[in-house]
Image (cartoon, rainbow, N blue to C red; front, side):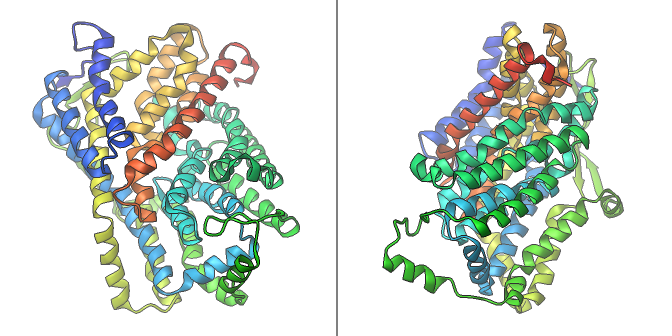
Length: 548
């Protein structure tokens, strides 16, 4: 057995924190300033974290290596599996020419890129997050936007920013459920509290998406659509999270918003059209160009072109039904990681008593969302008329194209697991917990940090949920608020998580340009987490009536 040590350097939490944060600082510097490729920055950061875990935290070498391998394996499955199959499905529609019809069908509803971002990145992305999570919405929506003529960097960046409001209730509410399990608090109360924080962000995110794309002047032109999108989503998110629980807010909010916004766009159009490929005041030339690109297709042709994504949506919903998931899990295999499983002891105050850290790799090959997407891809081959030989070739081509993003994901998930099993993550959390009465302001930062490290709001809640509760009790704050803030703050860290960056670059042809995307999203991530910090601080001391 090996006990985690959270304060290894001369009894000083701040020196220990400096040691623990060094790999993160290097990773930020490598991407933001050195513009290092993602997989290279990830591997160097892993080496640095490994050395600190062994030399500073006295973690046995074998345990540190195996924690990296274990995390890397989780990065490849289920996360890498989702990326490969989702990009594969998208490539099927491109190779068969069906994506041209998809593009035309969206353009017929609106050829304005601002409104397409609201429909696809915000609404459809939130629906996919609610059903599946784990990178699925970013892969699919970023690829769709790139195919619609968005600049690749903006397609990826906008989808990452859009994937903030729904993350806390993603994958049928798993992050909230895990937060309740870890902290011992009622998940329904946590759902209510998150539902009194995130709607304030949900109102703002659609505006911010458009503002990032085109600035204030052109944002004003579509303010009616922005109000409809943000207002509808926020209201449904609040009502469902406060009266139904954590399972359905994303699915209900996204579907209702998508329907209302689609109807609204049939009766309202902006005076001018904004597109990245031909930013207008429209000339006759661009009118002709757009008309030529927007051929009229029959309803049958449009449904056939969309059939891979409709099939994908149906299967993801089916896979998320508890009874179906339980049935599919009969063929799930689990392996305890040797040397690591239950040999690392988590210690107080991270937990209430010394607790063995589990290390079990789950291979749910049939229940995994990636498998549902692969099945959708297989049947899509028949629907769109693709030969099996071409289908296989396209799958192999997808694997080759994604080799570097998969390497990046392997390394950054391995890095996250070194941080977790060595106790370095806990050191960072304890340092933030030392902020006393200001802790409500920093509680969301803890969630933000957890999601940056792990790429998952669920993992962040599992890592820091109990610490949030303990610290809140120590300073006399309702722990429901701080545990909820961990999840609400975590959503703003999703867009800069190395895992998310790798997913987004893979789906938009930006492999090797992870640093550009990181530089694009980091300022928005910091800005949005500060909003959540301010909301939490106000709720802790001024707006206490908002706490359930």
